[in-house]
Image (cartoon, rainbow, N blue to C red; front, top):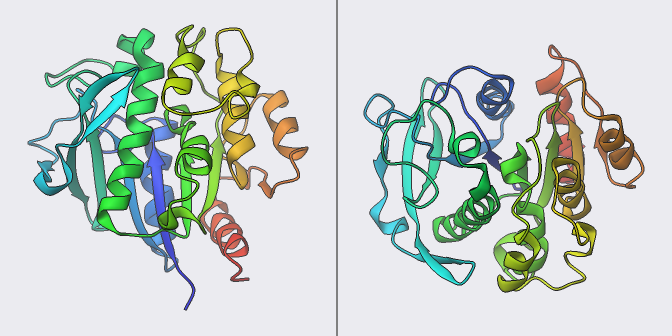
Length: 272
């Protein structure tokens, strides 16, 4: 029987965050594909903007408490969960007081403290992968949505390359008409090297601070397939995806999105 489990790594999900292109797709794509017969779970950061009481988040003690090492410092992982109604989709939230505020904020931490985004991405990515392992829920597809998920293909294909939980998974990276301003911390590549990545793994990053297009290209390099999820994606990124030799789904239009994704997913897992 074909594995039909899909794990989403999302930057934003509505209604936990206000409506935006990313947050609406973060909700509508997983629930839409769940309606096509896929078994779905999704992860996102536990930003300070998220009202835990109103959204009925609760900590999963058995999945919390492990320390993740970022830049040679320990950071405890806190895992929270909620059920998105009416779809009953499980949403897991990666939390840590060093990277996500425990008090209410008026904007996302990725905007409030962008100087920490390199480590925030590393912590979020490793937190998702370690939690997925603990859940013993082996996905056939991992779909990365939003630039905060851009390190997941690298981690899965290099740091977790020998882990049987992810040996057969197909990784999709979504391109959007949004990113971040400026560059990541100048020590980004150095911190990744401390996490065990080799110079060859990180060759694409070069010797200059990493901007959004470079981060997207790194994600596409290690992903198995790419989706143009919105119109207006930068031409250089569309060209990079088109020339990668990997399956590339051009923007299918809003009305045809779910059916196009359904067909694309099934082609990746050999279920035409």
